[in-house]
Length: 171
Image (cartoon, rainbow, N blue to C red; front, side):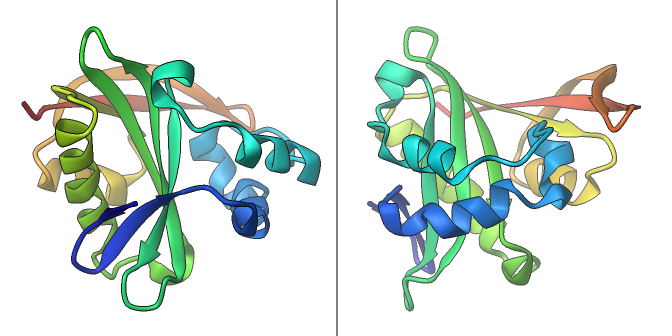
């Protein structure tokens, strides 16, 4: 568990299966996640029960909870972890009812601290579709720099979208 003032991160548990099913199988989230069909309960259960070891699997999903109530408000993913090069990608989902309350910003600050202090990461990166202005604003506000825009990089429902690659040096 890793704590901030209003939120904390924790590992996945069996209690998270229903909320993950709802998030992963919500078509509103598929454009960003590149999901093309719903996940079965068995697939989600298998994912939850995998040993979450970023050094072994090069990825880690953490649940974001409110400190005061322990309510689940989202998740944060670390992916493409490269221990030798000290870099990792970051992605986040905040449940719709908790958006625009500052929790995403707090999550970025907390995951940056976690990555620097716990994982020894020097570079955080993310990929954001150019029409996702909320995420662009969030990451830019937190010091991420757009290094390149990849034209027609992401296909969703037959439409092509440009994607920005952001990076932040944290250590």
